[in-house]
Length: 274
Image (cartoon, rainbow, N blue to C red; front, side):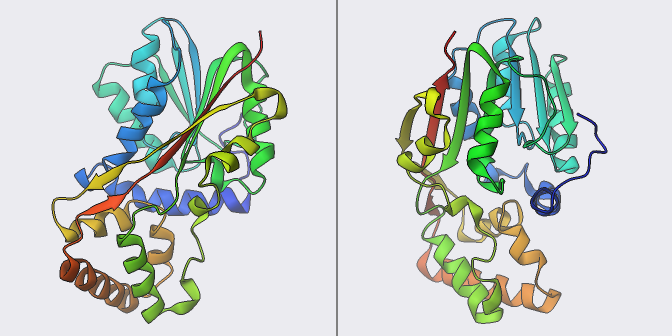
């Protein structure tokens, strides 16, 4: 895969959104990235010396624990379209002495990597960005060696509720045309929908896990807004509109003292026949 390979429009939009959001990824309010990246890796039968491919790897939330799991003899390759997130991932891995990691810029849906080259292929909160999701899942399956495993993790229903509804209400009061104009994470939110993405031969095991994310105060949800896919909506507003949305949103959150929100997750894994 060449770093300068042209990106699709979908990939460019994801790159803009999450490249901008990278400046908030390390904040405490965004701790769910690491929590669910680690939880995904914990479900895999990784062994010392294994090779792992992490697609849509972001800032290393799943690549870093995978690198620890496979040890110095193993190798983890992370690919993402957002270079600022890759920079964060490289720093994290270096600080932890994980020389068995490599992070490349590129479109995860068309890596050009040879088939069957990895003991595990992982995609956490990334599959829903692909314009052709079944084709992306089939491509991931192609990259898994016989006997290896594919893991795809998506959000469950009601992500960030009740704060999510407050956010879209605030956006609707300021710029109605942007309401839910970019929220692909709502497209695959059930075990059946995730299972359907896997190739027919995969026979995936799919588990829905209920979860709740806690904030220290209502205002911290604004950090999530700026450090997640909501960033695409915010960056489409003028500065004045952005200030209005923030004021309206925080007023709602404070009046209801919202500090807990829904973060249900769906884990899907499948072992490729040997």
